[in-house]
Every structure is written in C-alpha cells, then in structure tokens.
Image (tube, rainbow, N blue to C red; front, top):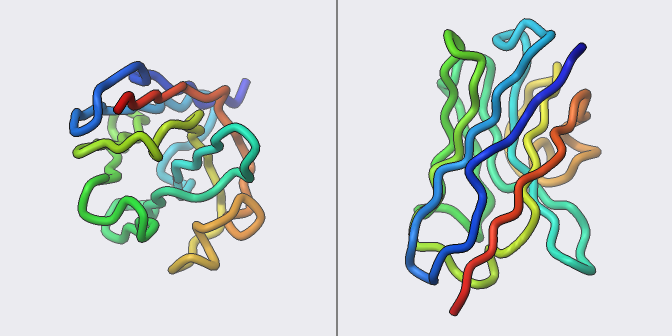
Length: 130
C-alpha cells in the first residue's frame, strides 16, 4: 500500500520552531519529487516547499523563504520541513505530497494541480499562538 505519513506538528508560540517529518512506504522514494502543502481554514491548499528527487533543488514560497527548509533522506524514505521563526499566519494543516513530475518555481510547487500530486498524506496540524 502506497502511503506517506506526516508527524511533528503541534502547538508552538510565535518565534518558535517545529520539524515536520514525512515517511513514505510502498513506493520507490527517490523516484518521486516531494512537497509540503498547507491549508488554513477557509483557504485553498497552497504549496510551501518542494524538493527534487536527489534533494539538490528546492523551492520555497515567498511567505516562508528564509524561515523554512525542506530536505530529504532517501536512505530513510523520509522528507523533512524545518520551520523556524514561526508566525501565527503559519497556522494550518500541513500535508506531505509525492509527485512523479519535476519542475521549477511557483507554477510547479505553488498549487496541488501544478505539482500533479500522486500521493497525499493525512496531514499534521501546526498551530502558532501569538
């Protein structure tokens, strides 16, 4: 069974840090580009960060650039998102996504449609208090 499973969400004060993890199973992990998306109540799901098959290329939304870092460990079939200097506006459900299609920029990672998501995780909640 192909699945990706997120962990690491929680409640944190503004300015704090969290590290999200996403472990994949049932698929050849390094065949997939990976991404983190988030969805706040009443808003559309948006791309946060994406990473290429090898991890050599990454993209981050302007809203998180300089604060979030995406990485992957292909030996462990695991994707990470290090989130620093968290803000209340970062509060959302965060989803891990896998795609077979690479790309660059916001047209690739900015939306689930652009990323051509093949597998979604169940999500992990991140709440940042002011």
